[in-house]
Amino acid sequence: MGKTYEMGTSPDVPLGAPVNTFGRTSLFIDAEACPRLGIVSPNDDTLYQLAQVDAGKEPLVLHVPATGDRYYVMQFVDAWSNNFAYVGKRATGTAEGEFLLVAPGWQGEVPAGMPVIHAPTRVFTINGRFAVAGEEDVPNVEALQDQVWLTPLSRYPGKPDTSNRTIGDWPLPGPDPAVPDDLLFWEKFRVWSQTFPPDPSEAGYLGQFAPLGLCEEKSPYVNADPSLAAVLRDAQQEGLAMLNEEIPTILPLNEQWGDTRDLFNYNVHFFEIGTIDSPEWKIADPQTRYVMRGIAALIGLWGNHAYEAYYPATYNDNEGQSLSGEYTYILHFNQTPPVEAFWSVTMYDVPRYYLVDNPLNRYSIGDRTPGVQYNDDGSLDIFIQHDSPGPDRESNWLPAPAGQFRPILRMYMPDSGVFEEGQWHMPSIERVEEPGSDLP
Image 1 (spheres, rainbow, N blue to C red):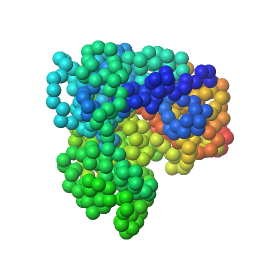
Image 2: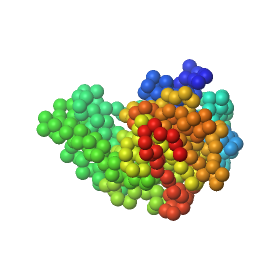
Image 3: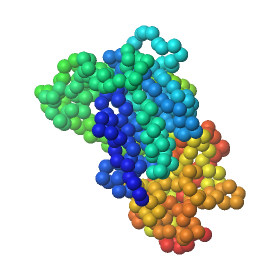
């Protein structure tokens, strides 16, 4: 496959960078990298750039470069996993820009003309993604990543500086080290729900857990009452089981694809630059919101709102049967996904959700795949099977494993018609009747 880029770009800026410093990956992920690095369901559409931010000491200035026509997004996620702001092609355009990032309650002078992003919690994550068109495009993305930086407001303007990389003299509280491992989940919940208070309207809901010790200033779990400890251990296991049971039912099916448009709509309080503060992007029922937040953390932590990037996935064909490499399939688009950026279908095996090794070294197919052949009427057939469909059809072949598989359809900057009934039809994957038969 050629050169595979490794994690990290220099000894002092690895992917796991210090606080208030961007790390990045220059890794173009392939089938070999998935098990070696333990990466599940990766995309090969974008390269990531990540910063864990603490704005408590002072605000920070974020600088982003001009990217021309290239898609990118800087997604802001608070301590409760709310997507509360976006910077990027959809939200703010692709011109060079700077933004002031401030913690709750900060008041001060803002540099003239600089947009302000108010974080709901003192610490938050910036999850950046840059579109990449194959391995040969990686150096171009690296050049843009070099121009993304954070610097303390007290050092601005001027050269980006690393003096505020760490939290410094305002450390974050942590769990009591004397708490046993089987109660550590609850100890972290206690500490961090107090360190990063939710919206005031949620205080009453959180307060109902006071009998479990979650509202105590000092840990009640060091020498916990045996009956309380048993309740907490059972509750953690039962809660996880409940979330797994809810996954198939809480995400509705659309032509056998799991509809994930509501998966990250549990944020109803915090809407900064680039977010859409509108009822259709909020889950109205509080109980459903809490369940959805847990499911999102379980299966798609730090995923985007669907209006930024939409990720339907499927395990089944049009008859509801499990997808398997022993059969051949067609995914026929009368109209390809309407997007303002780009779309792709990526193949994963089951149950590991790794990319699939294949003779073409092709892990996804979409509107940027070189050589894809469209039908005369503009429709598109994607041939999904384990063995080659023949030289004349390999341009449209998405190779599958020999066993079961799960594709994900990704739509970056989807058109509003994707979500409006009757505007765009998401096709199911149709199985050819006889195993091993030629595609029609």
